[in-house]
Image (cartoon, rainbow, N blue to C red; front, side, top):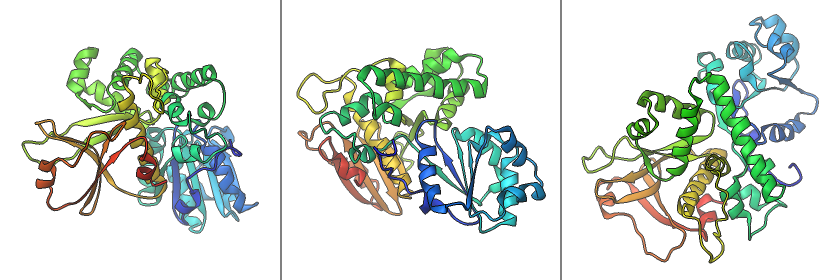
Length: 385
């Protein structure tokens, strides 16, 4: 993959003395590859530890500066992979930072609920969080792999995990993404939480897969699946923390005419989503043939997750929402910062003229609103690449 794809993210821009850079991200997104590339600049002044090693666990769970000192002294950078496997890792990293304030520290974890639980309060205000995702559309388009006639169709069908999108026949891609969905993601959640009713989680995933781009009702889903709302909320939280889905909240001014406390859930990777419902049908997105019934939802999910990746890698801290009122007027996606709001509508073509709903403008006169329609033809401008 190193020769095929130049990653868009610059790890060095996030690393600071006296702070721990925590890189979250699911397995197989290329964390090790990009870290190895970053480490090359430190020559012999760095050390790498594997969190699943018993020796590493013994060293970095000791809470004894004397023991820790042996392994970090004279280093410019310390890197610990899969740090969630180390007991009391947060306390030990604080001890190291206090003793060596000029040391750069980078740790990774494949699920945020595991590593966040380990680090917690000890590093409050002493850490920088960075989510790492599967390949971006920009990275794929600028790689040797890029094929303008198939690349968007492939991302919408098979997702953008490196080992899936970069090589193999159609049959091999399907097998690989199914393996990712079953082995790396779902089994990790089931194992970590020791869930007693895994069938509920699987049924929930199928339900969410069919509802991308639509508002979800926890009460309705809980009734359909025959379980409590509390259980559904808990399972959705686990899916978020393990980088399977993410939520988009509704924007409102607390007006009675606006939908409040509603969420939309999207998938971090569309290959995983399609594996859950076992549908890898061609999209024909660049052709005039018959299109998939869910193509509009796939394109909306694709555009939003790609924008999320771009914002994260470029350090843009926007608030993001969707908006809808009780009359059915809606906006697909909003990025808000200060008194500015970029609002977007996603569509497969621009045949139908669209504009910002008048009621949204009237009830948000304090905002400088910029409206754009995003299509297959102009989505790269939307992503800023």
